[in-house]
Length: 371
Ligand code: F6P
Image (cartoon, rainbow, N blue to C red; front, side, top):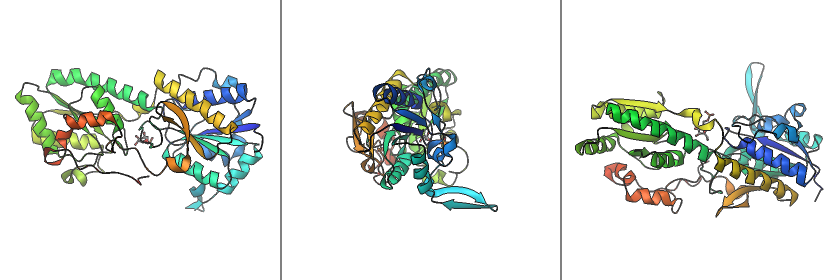
């Protein structure tokens, strides 16, 4: 194995609270434990298209960044060296520039890359690894839907923010006897909606994994009214599958607004909608996320030292381990996968299951293969 003297670090995809904590831990571990040089690669793999933009990361750069959200390295969720797009003679051209990216990493003297990113970034990391780039992965997404790790950092911060919002919505909903719809993130899986909904005491939780109908939601609202509860809080994941009657409107506005208007029309009650959006991705990471991110950063550097290229660090039974990146991608962790979550099993016994089609739990289905 080539002795390691220098590593590169990059962050790709949407940001998540805790990215800076990973960078800080990786820099400290690489410098203090292994005496390596560290190169910061800006804006994901795009930073290797223009290597002159990369710079040496020192302890000074990472001092004080532990509580900071975002990423000091910058990120992009469009950068893919295998499908790099730019405009030539007024036309968009797509090219594979992965050879240049690998050559530029070598020119910078990088012997190993820590790629911090979600499903898409890890898929790119794997392709680069197959072409010879020595690379290890660190999983990241606030959606917590990567199947190879029990938890991703950023999720705890996101559900803390969303729960705080639901708590605040509670008092105003109750005062005005309204239905309040809170739309949270979760493009494919309903983890944020499920956990923030439970933590915030929401009455209805709509997630991509369970089909629902507006009528069932309204029946549930009526049932609450019948025993004197004149307000209802509905938490909805942005990736929820709309019932057929709303599908045509999918492109018009947020799903929260669509669902809110439909509930208002049928229930004849006042409805207000809050779309939390990127607030859930910003701000200071929770202590849990700082600690998990720090553990991942150290583990990724140790993985490079052990020559564990092509692997990604992960959390398994609360221990930091490593899996092949190839096994970590291509299948998302959905709420309804068997044994995915004991919170989910508990919910199926209770009120969530009342909202599926025909008032029963929606059909269980695996989303294996979703990328
Ligand atoms: O995957 C993380 C996530 O925050 C999703 O929940 C959300 O749909 C998406 O990223 C938003 O991405 P963007 O920042 O590009 O709008």
